[in-house]
Structures are given as C-alpha cells and as structure tokens.
View 1 (cartoon, rainbow, N blue to C red):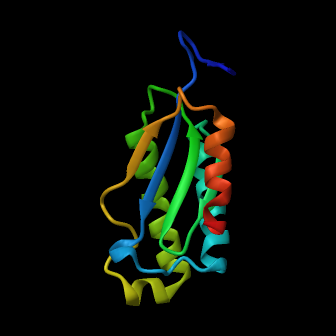
View 2 (cartoon, rainbow, N blue to C red; view 1 turned 90 degrees about the vertical axis):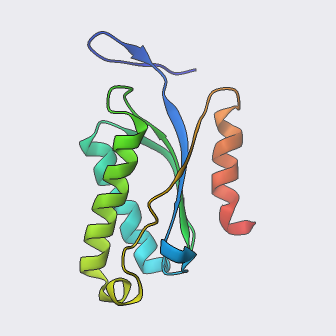
Length: 130
C-alpha cells in the first residue's frame, strides 16, 4: 500500500465516489464527459487530491480519489460538483434549459481499504461495458 504524508500525518484516504445528474437525465454525452474530466482533474490538482480512476456515464460520474483527511471527502465532492456544474452549465446552454441544476444533492461514497484497488479500478473502467 502506498502512503502519503503531510506536516504531521501519514495517510492513505481513498474513496469510491458516485453522483448523478438531476432526475438521472442522460445529459452527459461525449463532449460534456470530456470537459467534466478536465474540470475534475483541475479541482483535484487545486486541492492536492489525486484521481486514481474516473468514468463518466450518461447520467452519473464514478471516481476513485485520494484526498488529504483534513480536506475531507465531503468538501472535495462539494468542490467537484460545484465547479463542474457552474462551468458546464455556462459552456453548454442545453444543460441550463433541460435541468434546474446539473447534479442531485446526494452522492455515494465508500472508503477503499479492504478491497484491492485493482478490483475497484477494474469495476470503474468497465462501467461503460456493463
């Protein structure tokens, strides 16, 4: 297992995160998907987090992400969803006209510890083939 360290901490905080578009509408086409990935990578870089795996489905997003425990997964997901919604709705007017907001308020998160990362990575990679 690979650990990261900070000022007074050594950690391995990996999470599987999933969130959905409002009403599970299939609005995340290939062009939007490409842009979402860019935005999420920028947020990860800004927060010193690392996206280990990512897949965008037509109506939801899967991430395998590692973040500093002091930032916390809730704050990170809030930044991912907030920035991506703001930028995407500005860049793709059709998203504004079809939905009152881009994302639902809720999300799924699971810590990754007992399951080998390779299994979770494979699961996320294979989402489009399922």
